Length: 279
Ligand code: PAF
Image (cartoon, rainbow, N blue to C red; front, side, top):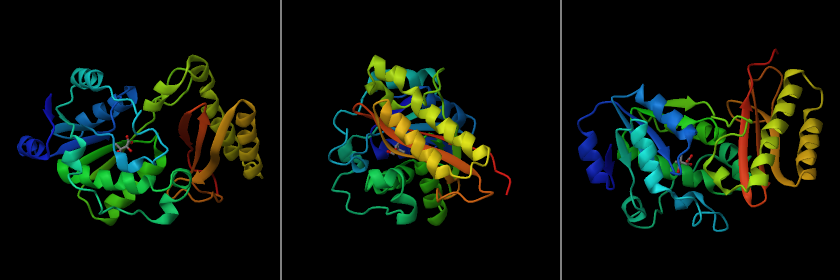
């Protein structure tokens, strides 16, 4: 595996390839990331993973400083999984001067759900992804469905800026009890880890209500929020939305049920995609 710490090294190395397939990450890699890499390896003539903890997508009260940085373990996992190129710029390489230009996604996509609870988050994500795309110049980019709203917004960004990149979505990888794999799961204590599956179970109950055509989904969502709160969670949202723009669901829309909730000091997110409902 070739490791590039600078944009110049990366560009020189990638000059020999025509079809880079790219997986951007913030490190602390788990099986979900490795599944995205495995997919990427089938889609390009060279696989590129980036590890960069992007300050721009963390609010001042969030976990930028404590975000798990596991460089040696990440390198080992990537080597074992057959990654060709790891791009790991230090902050001054990617942001040599304050990054005052930004990619501002539209409010109707970026200020709802995650963006409502994490103002500015998607501006930080879009800005770094645009910059990483400029560095790697991938032909294919693989993003996980676990960050469903991020995937939707980046798809729109690629389309609106006519970037010559095929966007591929990887399924969410789950632990055997159903918990979606996430770098932030590392923060959970043993009792919290045992409790954590209740987020995906709450989403399952809302998904079941959608499937069965429940007449009052808002009531089901509220009930599931209360049930999580009663177990000691602080839920931000649990809601069924339409897949393509995450706006409220209307009959016949393909639905996705999304949720975010804090367990102790750890904020977890998850979602379940449903097949198209009959109109
Ligand atoms: O999903 C992530 O890990 C990050 O948001 C990303 C896409 C690597 C941008 O920093």
